[in-house]
Length: 226
Image (cartoon, rainbow, N blue to C red):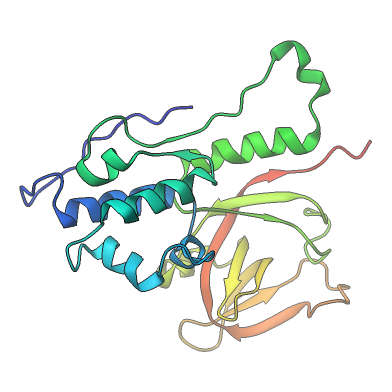
């Protein structure tokens, strides 16, 4: 499932190998891999502040050794990219590795494989996509434990447009949940509500908290109950 090469729009007439243009390509490939900056640096191979410098085109911008680390990191997420593209915009644009199927054996595929394939396609087509495997019964009856959901992240003031929707959210303390988002009492705060008020393991309502992002559910997959 190759993603067509989209020429970079350079309104500043900068060389394609300039630090600022390399910065745009770093951010683009990170988004294709659906990784936050923190996730990109989680294993310690890339320093967070170094990555920020690369993505802002500061201090000379991305280096060849840095590009090699990025290529290795996004490869683990199913994204194929080259050092030459990152450094000089040469060669094919990055692409998401397709999951191939033998049509004659389609009936033998497990739910997990099919869900992984559909989710990979969704993430390849949507920048800032996020997914979650539901791990509680707070959103019954529509969403059951084990269901997989996905959406597109909204951050900052854009979180307000998700009010009233069932969303994947990340709270400021790093907890990721599926909840209905309501307006909070204070500016830039939100109330998270369970559709199932009988939930016992977690609070059914959490009031006036700040969110890192909110992603209305636009993709939902249930496993076969048989």
